[in-house]
Image (cartoon, rainbow, N blue to C red; front, side):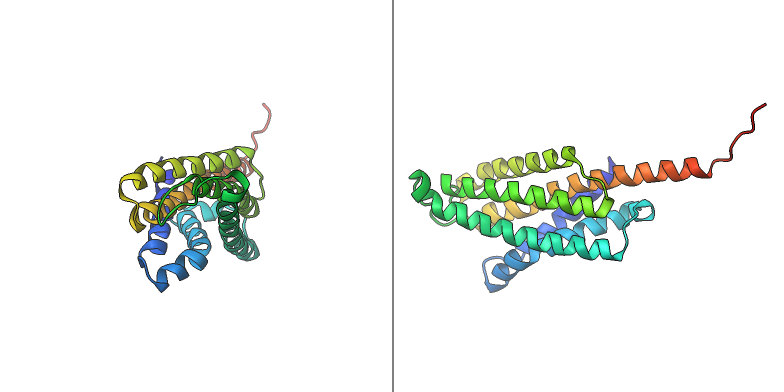
Length: 206
């Protein structure tokens, strides 16, 4: 439980850092370019704090590849969001949303982006651990849906920057980081058990 909380907190902090500038040019910079690297750093921080790095067979190149995957995943997910949300009024005849409104076009856009991001982050976890997990992918998809539902509920009465991005980004990075952290720790636990078994002295038959 402590390990999961560690990753949830590092993810939450990473998300808060990205939305902290508020409505300004710096906010546009961090939300466009910073979320992917912030998520990567949150996962790495969780790995270091939890001690999983000592049992995780991931070299420097794997971490570099993971950073690239996180960066590209978020940028492409952002493009998917704008594409689906922008064309939804033409495709499905829904009303375009106003500022910070969670209309059907925004819901469809965020769902599409979260689905894409789940696949990319599952790939990131695979690169770190060398193990693909359909369970992790399912958890990431669920985390995306939960994030969207909670953001819609919180945003409904306020409809401002903090009820929209201030919930969506930190909560999403926290839940995604928690899911990846659980997968990484499970993998490191398996490695620790294998290593412990290998170092156990073999008993001679009586």
